Length: 396
Image (tube, rainbow, N blue to C red; front, top):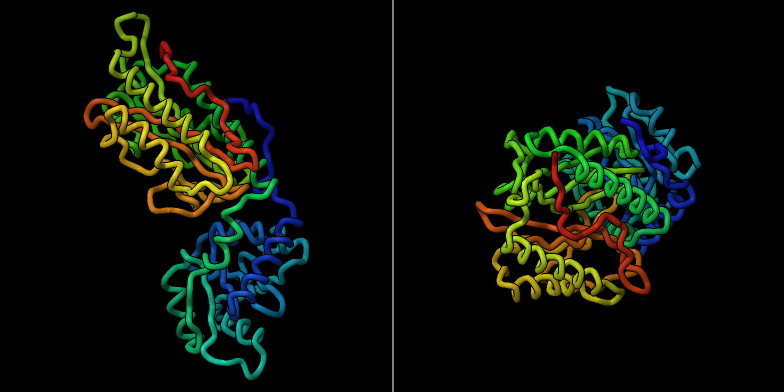
């Protein structure tokens, strides 16, 4: 399968961005009165340094102190890839390797204390990655008994929730690649194939379009379309039924996530969409369009959810919309902000999220439309370009 997109480096964010991010993180560490921010493996580490570290039982940790050098602590066998990451290669962080017989947590503790100097008041406050393994956190508590530990998101949430121009460019490239995969699947044969077989094709096409990872490929046909997170199964797709196609992965480290609903007709007119399903889809289409149109700086996140929910409820399907309207996206498929009732946080320019209402009639059929949207100064910047109408295809 030939790629239609130029392959990209694993993490093409420039080192200048990592310089800005590390500086901003240090400012927030000081502003919040922290002794240090300790960042383990995952999206937070990739955001600050560009290092996509392996999730090992061996500790990898970025130590961002209020004062002194920023240090990336890694196991000796991971020294080469750590030194090659953007922030290390640019000299923005010092890389310190520990040997198999050493205790890396004690090393981290020494780095934290060294940054404080003598006479530091106790207790000190330390923030750690929200998803740091408990085994590492318990050891840190033993090594730094004078510390009170809190969540790293108190620092990193403020930075990661607003995307810069490089991040938006990667999100857009990922969205367009996923658009092309949807178009290819809609043009191809569907009838007589299993959901799992189509799902495998989706993953292959995402990789061929430049994605380094194909994270999910939901192919939910017939009554399975009423299950929002359906796992592609051995069910054989037939004429005269819908397919909810929800696909995504990462390109340049940033996520794609698109959902389109297809109707497979075959060659017989009798298999065209029935009236009730067309009516249901028309309600959904209006809800998704109006919710997207409502995106602009200053609008509470929960308002986007309310716009979609009010239209669906007015159409008689309020009980059949069973999830939030959207989630943030970036280095992770699901991150803040969340478009859900109770989240009154105002949208800000640069926030990126899905807008994806759905209607699900359990045991019968369902439908969903999803786009990735960036909150721009003038309103919504819709990254996906694939048609949002019901995609009526022959499937043969």
